[in-house]
View 1 (spheres, rainbow, N blue to C red):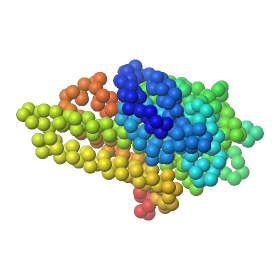
View 2 (cartoon, rainbow, N blue to C red):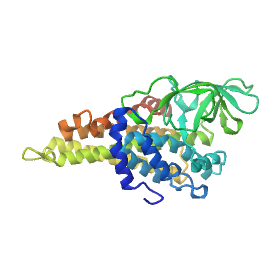
View 3 (cartoon, one colour):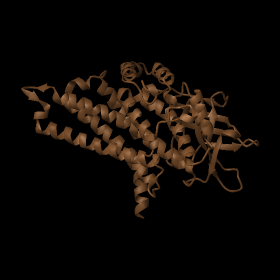
View 4 (tube, rainbow, N blue to C red):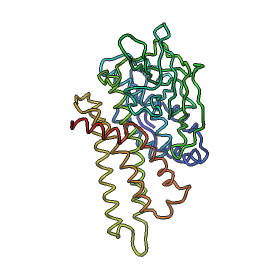
Length: 374
């Protein structure tokens, strides 16, 4: 392994454990330990802070490789990378308020994403969780977060909550919670259809304390002007899409292998319908990868765009939709072998469905499009 990419041997080892994690509904503990030991949790941390210094485009490529080997491991690690990349996003634009995240990540702290809430269609732009000032510059948070990936191991949880106590009107408070706070618990059982190894528990906040030093921003609801908001939205959208692009990579690989196998006197590629389906899948996948690459490049190059939120939501939805379609084509090419419940493809089929639930949803994307047309 170089200090800037995951080795093929490590990825093969990770692929070999994925089925057991899924079957046992168990956290990817061994994968996590090896990735951590390799320094991968600091992959996006600039070299000056002690990390690998990967650009967003380079990190996206590594996440595709990891997810192709083990989708749940890729998605789990992804949520740590999101916060590290957000900190880098700000740092590269002259904003040092999350430089401590870069230092903490290099020192071994594990970050998790605590934004999702049941029934909150606004997602990042507003919150159901309530924040009450504690009188010392911090807040006490009460509410429930869902899909808190890396729940068994995180030490820093990035969250947002709504403060309705100020004279300037409601504000959405962004910041971080620390694992040892007594007001944090994980009720319920994680037993999803797919992405089981992520162990993305529900997280209950009951007066959990956000220290004043860990408060990152206070913004008006639906105000996207703070650089933090674009940093979070762009990083989450693109890195999460990278995971599903990795699933698409593997699906195309399996579909191609299946199509080349003998079917009767020839191969499936001799069947015009099968050949057309595989061709279309390859072309759609290629277009998805190009869309992802363009936006990764624009973030890395600090490009100015008027359509950031639309472009990011469109790319995330395109990639996740295409990955699901690619998995279906792989089923058609592999036939009954892929339909076995314990096959890699069957697990990928369940895992890829999780792409439906990551923001921005297709519904939110449609609303954004309608807004541009009004």
